[in-house]
Image 1 (tube, one colour):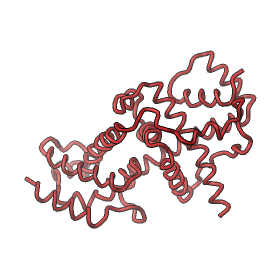
Image 2 (tube, rainbow over the protein chains, first blue to last red; image 1 turned 30 degrees about the vertical axis):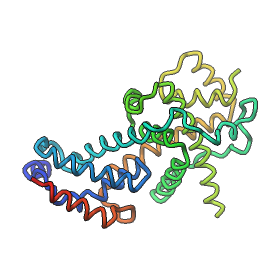
Image 3 (cartoon, rainbow over the protein chains, first blue to last red; image 1 turned 30 degrees about the horizontal axis):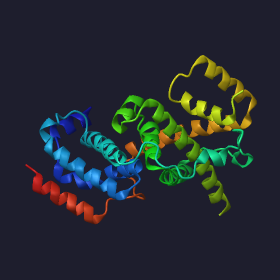
Image 4 (cartoon, rainbow over the protein chains, first blue to last red; image 1 turned 180 degrees about the vertical axis):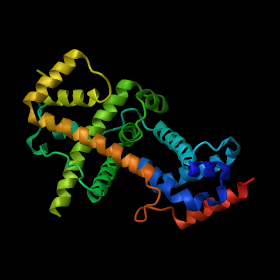
Length: 195
Length: 87
């Protein structure tokens, strides 16, 4: 309670934002956008927008959460803008289902291993490193819808509206993303074990 | 009888919405028979759970010494920007 009261009476301190929250917001943005330059851009936009709306901050909640809220909005705007130029079903040059299924739609035998769940924080970091790399190998739109869905837990309607796609398009994109990710992650995990 | 490829689509769809009774029965029956589709289902459950967990970590962890930071250059740029625009 005391802490909360303090942050309300303190209000906002823009001069300390970069040092206090810069890296935090940057890491968050990188986790969603997978690109340092893009992340820097949205963090800067967040600070500028926050400064513009300082009067609207009514001391509700802590400064960090307030800034994060603005950043989340900026990230969605960024994702929308960068997907506007990509066609709906972006050329998926190596159609993953052809690798994973035979002509009759049965699994190819070699894809039988299962995704390992991380057991501790070290393994979790490794899991994230691999997931991040696998997301990077996906067509942009597939990766972005996966992140919006599984990391941000955005509702179907929100994603569809922001990316201007139908629900069934979204499900196809998610399906392809999941198929690719499960394959990619198992392959990389095995690679890491051997090397 | 649906193929594994068709079942894998149903698995993914079932995470997005309540699928029809017919699809649900097909899915359940197939999964009870097919080890590889069960694995795929399990993979997606793990993938979703871990993605969620990782996302929460990024929101919670304010100080994380070892990981990525803003470059000095952009840090300075943002500070100057905030200073110049401060009321």
